[in-house]
Length: 374
Image (tube, rainbow, N blue to C red; front, side, top):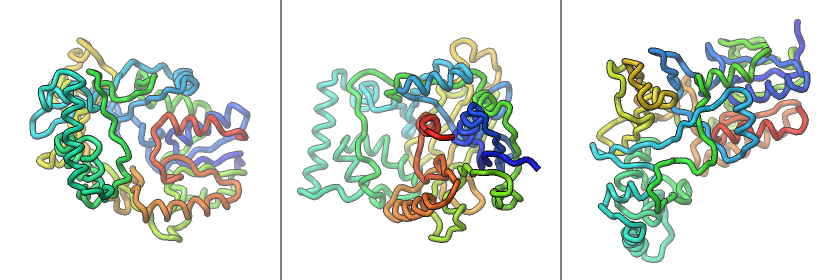
């Protein structure tokens, strides 16, 4: 029976990057995953020759050149620029909020006109509060960007995402709403962004090259639950409350589901991501996967397209947890679980589930690269 330096539970970016680093310094790893594939939520499924982001759109972005150079040393990334569109009851608006958005909404043509319109609506909202601090997300958002932007682009979309009215969500969820007074539809401010050429599976395959792995293996119902028999240390990237047997209570999550279909047309919506910001559509967004990696006239070399409707729902047992619920109860409970985690000998908790924190992809990799002693 092999004995490993590390047993790694979960083959998402945290687990895969950790395994890569450990192999670099001569450590032996076994990585296990309960899904039938490696890669966690960045796994891509090939349909009609198109890499389909099976668990939702993933766009890599960072301003850290070290991280960008690291991932490009594994697989070259393309030049994809994230520029989502919002569809509100059939009308289209550019995101993030920028001069294109304001022109589409009000017909304004200059930054000064846009600023004046937003400030007028902000002051109306602040006046309506009569000196009080915003008590909920709705009041907070209107005081930041005004009524029109809130009602068209934030309110119903947020309610679909969280399954709660904006009046019932805490104000601190929205601390700021970036408003750009330039005609720029690039969603991210980061210096570098893109998608691995050939899809995210290429990144995972590169990170895990030469590392032993087992899929369809659930840590809790397998022999590996008694991990000390198999490894000196454990890297755990599953849900932190599950590790501790929910001893302090269950953490809440939001999850998403997808309805994916093949469209008999080469270009369905002309953009990778279209957000549906009104309640008249039950899904939050539609993803057309080919636009992540196929550009210009090449789009028409593929006669069909693959689209996914994304639905945000409340998490129940058996689903895949996606997003931590950032409210007072869950933040307090997560902090208590993290205190337990700190006392676990030879166990590293990583990733969104293992730390109950929302992370983009680049910060996860940065976290692993910054480990001093692997």
